[in-house]
Image (cartoon, rainbow, N blue to C red; front, side):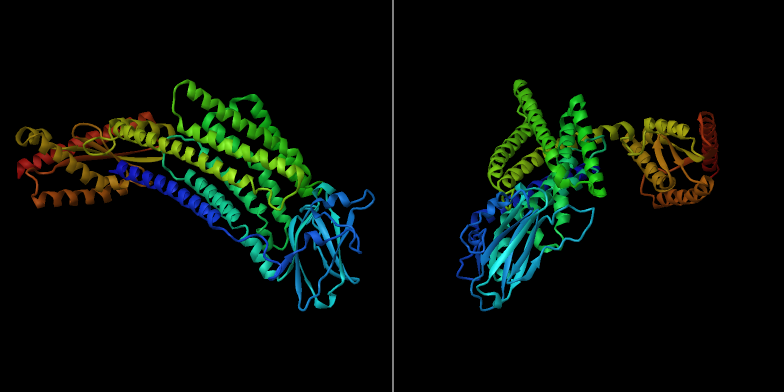
Length: 568
């Protein structure tokens, strides 16, 4: 019955996992299929996008390419100014724009309207991070020239000032967030899927040693989902200091591949390779150095990010080579390995889209660097998660078979108590740990042969089952019960005061036997002889003495029961 319940539990988990992933994937697909709202509204409504209206001079004669603003910096200064002539305004208008790795100062008619706030802290990055800026422009500045002074934090290649909108702030933000609905759903799905896989790893579904592959894959999925969510640039609307988000984004990019490598080791034992062991050690040392540099203010994670990218590339190459190798081996053996095939499809989708995204990013910075990688990551996560779930389900089935075999090996088939093998192993354990105090009740069922001869072996089995139930519900309530012979039972009492427990259980035992016999439901009378002994600081000699003493006292009680019946 226990194994059947466990089987139903495993099937429920498996069905729920696959159903949940299918529903989430269908929801994401539905959003992509039905989404009609564009990122930018019609300028005649509540806001306009002004990226193309900024110039490099106050007169407005030299257009500024905001996508390549870094090229406008001279070697003598880390500041460049761009200008925009404000339109006629009848009410307060908001300027909303995104910056990355730069500080900004807005000046109009000699007045400072906005300045990036970045409290000094050696624990944070040098730049404000990936930040959404908002500034209210009063109507009295209508027609004035607005100057944006941009200061870079790292180098000019990292300068980003884009998605500059002017109009009603609430509509701008709502439109930007709405335009990211699909990306948000994919990111949230990956985060939830990662947490779910991590949670699944800690469900005690197996009693045998198992790997932690689903845990490591869950970590990688969680990190990927967090990075994807930060790349939507939506979270930045809801935080006051985006440097923390930048730090988190850099951390997950650096550490996300290590769980993936551990996942591969869990599945294919790849860390037997000395080169990979060395590579992992170097990466761990690098991460520690990065952390110390960030905490001491000597450097920050953004500076070290480019150095970590080769590790990321090598680890993903290892991932691809490992799975391809096992796929080829499975094909040569003539196996139809669904798990490896799913992983092959996942890697292919991720690599194709990643190569495309790297090529695109090399030519221009993008507000969302994961816009193309995200679908590939989603397919990768889904296929790898399904393959791991299939593998985990196979392990669960193997585990249940192991449980069944183990149950047969260590439990008595008739009474479901521990058998003699289990009893002997328990005695050895007591000898190894030298348990301080131990009590033992030795029991024997009277008249089993008489019942078998006169009423049949079926009634004899009923007698043994009934005796086992009485023993388990009385003495066994306070210890471990075993059937160690045809009609012989014993119970170990692991208590500080085993003799007190024995006296208490003995009263319950007598009461239970009396109730069974007074009911006269069975064609036989239940008689169980017993003897009790105890020992301290158990070793082999003391345990043997305890067993012999309990056995002797049990036979004395057995003779007493027989004499009492003859007397009656």
